[in-house]
Structure formats: structure tokens, C-alpha cells
Amino acid sequence: CFGNHELFRKLAFIPYCTVHNREWYRLITHGFVHADMTHLLVNMFTFWSFGKYIEETFRYLGFGEGAFLLLYFGGMVVASASDVIRYRNAAWYTSIGASAVLFTAIFLNPWDKILLFAVIPIPGILFGLLYLAYCQYMARQGSDNINHNAHFYGAIYGFLFPIVLEPRLFQAFLNH
Image 1 (cartoon, one colour):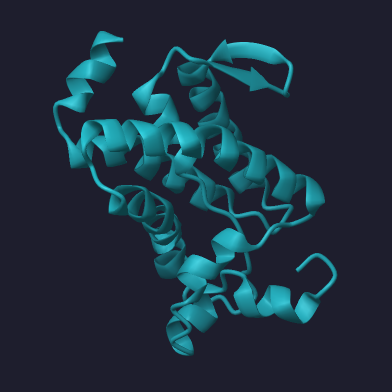
Image 2 (cartoon, rainbow, N blue to C red):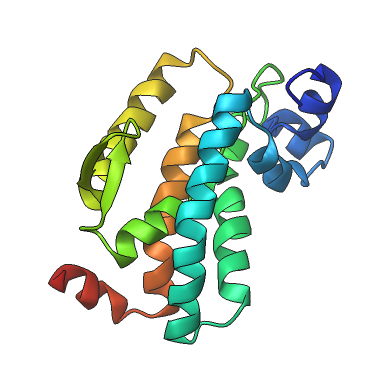
């Protein structure tokens, strides 16, 4: 959608259109729209890096093949839920973005290193806290079309998702 504004408007998350035009597909499609090539590459690298680990861990835990799909697509829907309510009558509001996969990886292995700014290794749990703070800061700025609230809520969903699948994992998280 980088150079195709019409396609961007058709797929982006616009709560007004989602509710009033019943374009519920937007709850999913906005997760595939990116602001620019850098946004796409960062998301693809994150997905590749952590998605494979999560798939293998889910398989080891016996969650089945559908668990990862539920994480991925459920994260897009849950991430948008508050904005559907908040902006349902705001025809001007448009956004993109959701995030769940990284935070499931952080939950499963909180002390594993993540590269901050692609060079500074820090524990995943610290990265996660910094990311959540950044999302809240950027959401208050409102200066781009990236839905930082969706990233925030998607991250929370991703963190809680393994607990919903297997509540005993919370104790394992605390024991890390």
C-alpha cells in the first residue's frame, strides 16, 4: 500500500467504516498494512525471529497448529477492539498496526536478549516494558497513522495468550 492510497484506505483500520459500513474485515486487514518499507521490514524480521520460536514452543507444549493462528489473528482483533468503540463515529480516524507475537515470545522466555535499536542486547522483559511505554507515549502524540494503542493492546494480548491456553505457564513465567 506504500504508493497506493486507495488500497491503503480500503484495508486500513477505520472504525467508522468498520461499524457503519459493516466492513469487519478491517479488524484483520489493518495488521497487514504498513506505513513504509522500514515498518514492513522491522515487522517481518520480528515475525520471522519470534514466530518460529513460538510455533516450536506451542508444538512442544501440545497446543496444536491452530494456537499460533489464534494468537496472530486474535491479536489483530483484540488490538482493535477499544478503537472500534472509541472511534466508531470518527470518520477521520485511520490507523494501521497490531502486535502480539513478540510479547508471547517475551512471556515464554522473559530473560532472553532482544536487541534494542538492533544493537543493544537487553532482557526481553525490559524491552517489553520500554515498548509499552513507547506505545503509550506515541499514542498520546497522535502524529502518525500507526495505531500505537493497537500495538499496546496487541502486546498485552500476546503476553496473556499463553496463560489462557495453559494457566500453569504463569507460574513458570514467575519462576524465570
